[in-house]
Length: 137
Image (cartoon, rainbow, N blue to C red; front, side):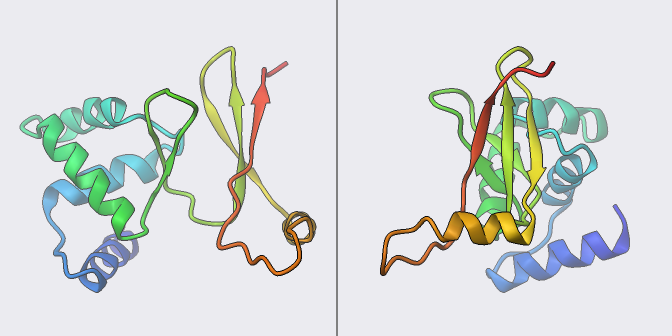
């Protein structure tokens, strides 16, 4: 993991009264190295390649910690497994029904403002969760 990412991880954990551990670093590195919104089981399988002794329970605990520290977001699709997204910038998702994969869609400042303008009078959004569903041509 690059020094800047390791430092960002450590700072975010410390702000929430937690300390960096090799397991948390491994899970975070797995998430940021391939931004494909993996499930916890997929994160576990990737972590096992780097840290063979890591358990599934540890991976789940690390994911919960990373979410609590605002380092990753949970992406839920209906009743399917939760997926994890390390992209913390305002963005939308495209869920391909054919492959099951989720892809990030950058939102321009204009698109973001247009979405916010749709809110009823007197409401303030703390975030936007927008998902397109379809198939890749």
